[in-house]
Length: 194
Ligand SMILES: [Zn+2]
Image (cartoon, rainbow, N blue to C red; front, side, top):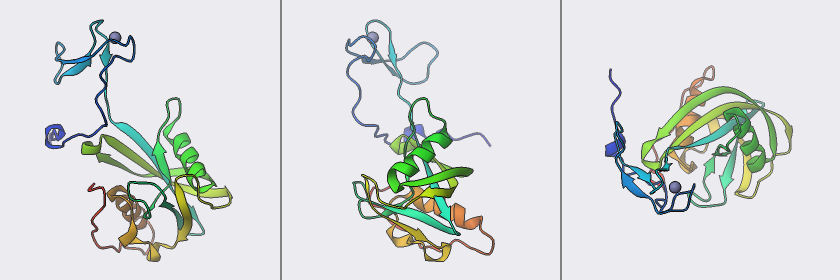
């Protein structure tokens, strides 16, 4: 089956459009380049400002069969639960970024394991990779952007208080891999609409 082009069906919000070229500081304008398929931001010196989806990496840290989630202390979805995760930095592998974000947000040291899933949100311009991880050290404690870290057994996950649809998808996919467990949840509405 050919892959469906969903680009035009999603209003993309990637923040403010750059107005100046990061290479030379001249103003940029949208221009269709030869053999390209959509306008690009180009400056008078022909530098192209490429804009692509950003990558978010995170983990489901597991200890004694329970998964540790962090309660968000910042918007969006403040007060709701999600996995530790954040934007991948240049120069990092996805596993390194996931391990770093986990330590920053939960103070847990983890060994990053198998990939749970890749979650694409075209309208947000974000691709999220979530790994299962084994807790190997540290003491669970909130970081700068979280207010609480708590361990949940697969049967007691806070399905009604999750932060994002990606949180729900990753937990559902994780629970689905556990022997004897079925995903148990009601579809939820999310504050960010994604
Ligand atoms: Zn330029």
